Image (cartoon, rainbow, N blue to C red; front, top):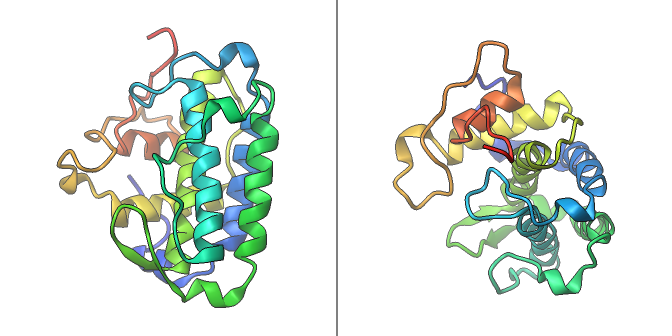
Length: 209
């Protein structure tokens, strides 16, 4: 995988502009999901499209709540599907995104230290890198699962590459990280496809596979 940003960028830059680009991309993909696609498979082993959307909404809202209160919400990181109508996932993600953007508009939060649910403590600018990474990576998953054609802007992909290089290196996947062994991407693959392969996604995954 070729990373156009340095790993230091993840811990030093303001991720909010690139988050807004990533959120635009993800929001458009989610809004286009049809109710008849919700129970289909995704590249995330064991997750349906509904499960993936549940995770994305809950994760976005979770980062908003963490920034607002200093404490991450409990639970599994999944939004109960019973709370959201089959045609309501786009609106649910948009509401969570608006909450996140409003909370993190406060510049002081970028250097405040936050305790993440799975153990580590990070400054806000690193914490906010998480939804950028999730939008790019799970956006790939969602597009493959539903036939979505939208692609992210180069900036979020470069940023997600830097996050992957720093926090999900190929040599440290010991079963505790949610990524499989590095896969081979074809020569014509774009940056998002290469990132997906680096994180263990088979480049030729399809719902019918």
